[in-house]
Length: 74
Image (cartoon, rainbow, N blue to C red; front, side):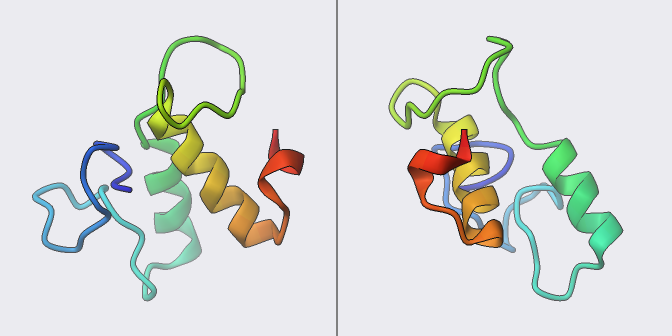
């Protein structure tokens, strides 16, 4: 999913340069894109892809990077 709009796929053709993580992005750019990713204002972490798709997207990315199953991420 896009980092700026969970209804869209992550795409390099998105108008926002913060919508996707490119394989050639340096670590500082990746950190910035993750920090700027859209989430919500609930102030807690929970896995609910239907009600909180942006947060679920970030948790999925984190789990993939760390090699963790989804139920261990939050």
